[in-house]
Each structure stands twice: as structure tokens, then as C-alpha cells.
Image 1 (cartoon, rainbow, N blue to C red):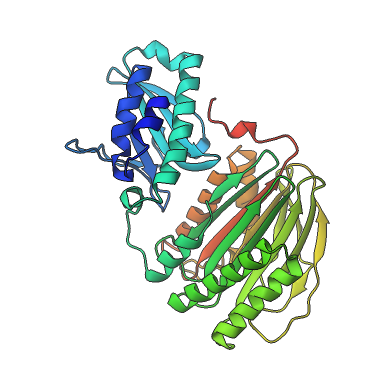
Image 2 (tube, one colour):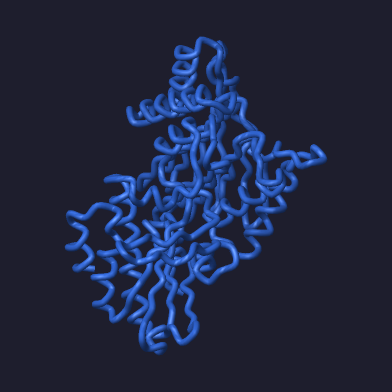
Length: 393
């Protein structure tokens, strides 16, 4: 880790694989860095100068993909090569996998060696996130498909898709990743609270992206000034109304979860009602706390409250999820969404992977072509910590 720190101190993002090569030899191994593409369908090997990169791996159906999906270390001996596949994470944000090759297959089951590799991969995850802001090298690996201008705008505004503390985990996803228009989400975590919002501006073009950007900026500005949910909502309303003079509007849900008590306060503006997931079942629709659409000349509304139990999850989504239509014009619907989530929970699927699978299922329902943006955001409250997310099993 010291070698990796020293080597990356003044390193551009595209030379990260070289730094990994130099550092991993101290563990008696060699390694290949694979990063997940933005569609979360492929693991793409980072190229090294004069060395041909390995082939891309599918996230579904490969050993490396399983390590990524389930946050579980994978081992194998393939053609005499002893391999350890270690998830690369930044906090709880999945970024890819590190393929580690050792000379002695016995090292694969050495707990001390695996622990060292986990710390190495975890620190590598931090480096990937930091170095990504310095240039386009890491983005070039992950961007396997072109983006529209609107999608470029939205992606630059998003927080990490997954984040968490020992009291809460938040995970979200936008589809289609290359042409999303007016959907956006945001959150802010502290030791005492999790604040969050999901917003959906009308349309699917650059104007939608601009409206979503204005709404998000207004939300962050009000939140960071310490304003409550009602003031945050009114700030979004005024920003959209002033900027677009009634030509655009947005729906949204804003909330604040007290991490000490589980008290959830929320307000919904013309948006699909959140779902409450408890003990593996959708037990309730959170349909109180309503107000009109943001950007229209109507401001009345009220804030609702719900007391969560430990390990409850609040499920937020845009109408592009439930109103996705197949070739027979059948909506995906709330019942399919509920059944899918409950099945994934029963199978022990980690929350970030469940979000990925839901969005992939929506794409499959529409044969890979969405008629509307499909966005999901999950917030889980816990009093027992997130130790199970450490990929050491």
C-alpha cells in the first residue's frame, strides 16, 4: 500500500495499472485492474503501455462478474494459474474487480494474504475515484458507449451511485445510462441523518437535463443552507418556474431520515409513491405528504412522517420503472416491481446489485430500448452496521 501511495502521488489516471504492477509484487503476485462500464454489463481491463489488455468480461456469467455482483471474493485455478478475484470498492461503491495471480495456489486460502489483498483493493478503489477527477483515462475505460449531451450533463451532477455509513446505505441507478434526460437523484449523509431526493423533469432531451440540473442545484443549495424539506421543495419549485416560465415542470420526492430514531419525514410532488421494504416484503406504500408538481403555480402541501424499523428500506423510483411497456404495451407495473424486489431480497442479493438487476429487468421488458428514463434509489436504515459489505468472505 505504501508503494501504491508513493507511485500514484503524481500519476495521471491512465498510468494507474503501472502503479498497481509495481506495488502488487510486494505481495508476491501480479494483477489486472478491471473496471465496470457505465452500463454495468462489462468488466473492462485497464490497458498498460505496450501490453495488450485482456478481453472484456461480462458481469453476468463470469467469475470476476460474480465477485463484482455479490461482493464476495472468488478463487480458481485455471490452466494452472491460481487466481483470486477481489472486488474493487470505494467505501461501498462498486467500481470493478482486481484479478490477482499468485505462483502458489495455497495462497488463495491464506486468510492473512486475502486480508492484505482486500486492503490493497479497497485502497485502489479510493485511488480510482480520486484519479478519475484528474483526467479522462478512467472514464475512457468505463465509457463503452457514447452519451448524449443531456446524459453528459446529468452524469456530471450525480453523487456516487452507492454510498453508506455504519447506519445507512444508499444505492441508485439511472437507465439508459447513455441517454438519460430529466431524471436525477441526490443525497447527503451525516452521523445523524440521511437526506435524499429523486427528481424527474418533463421530457427526454437537453431541456429536460437543464431543468433537472436547475432543480438539483436548488435542492443542494437549500439543503446546504440548513433549510428543511418544505423550504427545499419550494426552492426547487421556484428555480424551475423562474427558469422555464411554466414550459417545464418536475416531479419529485424529498426526504430526511433520522439515523438515531428511524423517523422518516418526506414530501412527494406529483411523483410515484415510495415503497417500504421490511423483512423482505413490501409492506406499505408511502402515499402521504403530497403537493403539486414542481414548477407550476401551486404551492400547498404537507410533510408526512413514518417510523422505520431497523433494516427497513425505502424504495424510490420514477415512472419510467413502472410504466415501462413491452411489445404488447403491457406496463411493467408496481406488482412486477414488488415481486422482483422481494425475490432478490430472499436470495440475499446485496442492495447495489439488486438496483442493477431491477434496471436490467426494466431494459429487458422493453427489449433494451426505454421509452422513458428509469431511475431507482434505495435507502436502508440499520442499527447493526454494514460489516457484511466488506468483501472478505
